[in-house]
Image 1 (cartoon, rainbow, N blue to C red):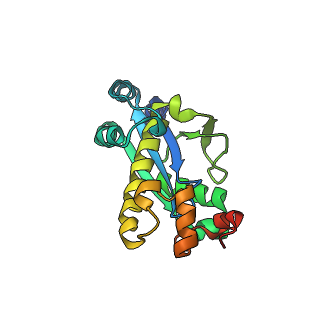
Image 2 (cartoon, rainbow, N blue to C red; image 1 turned 120 degrees about the vertical axis):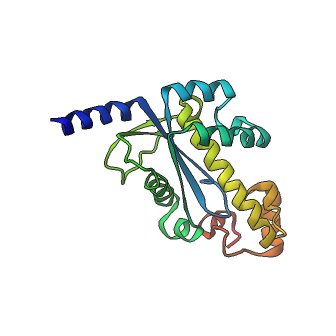
Image 3 (cartoon, rainbow, N blue to C red; image 1 turned 90 degrees about the horizontal axis):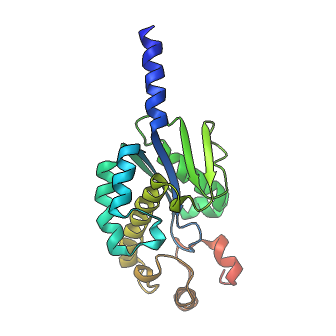
Length: 205
């Protein structure tokens, strides 16, 4: 009987936690796609909201960096996953994004009872309960927190890669297909981390 009570209590605790997932880099032409999942209690959601946690796109890089340690400290758990350029080109961006999300979830200490995903696309391989929330990063603190964790993680990687792949201004465009970036591809050629499946549309492959 004690085991059953313990399981019931764990289910209640799980439901009291908000588990949000978001991705970043889906529309870039260079580098991997990143996903993060953040687990937050009701109490800590309110604290993070007061600190100013919201959709990462609405925050300055400086503000995101200030919020990151607070998110990591106040989250009950978190995970980061990514899918490579090769996986994006081979499997397509949706499947690659789903893989990055699953990799993030698999890093959690416990399997969540329900996940809340930013956007309208479901995580098809996930067998548990899930909700899709359009503009979820503006509505759910856990999703907003995940968007900040994913954004900073990917930006840090792209900034490191800028040293190896100079000439593309990656530190500035973060791998997105800006006019300047596309002109530099024409000038310097395609690297092994550029998404060929994306660049076909720009007649650069």
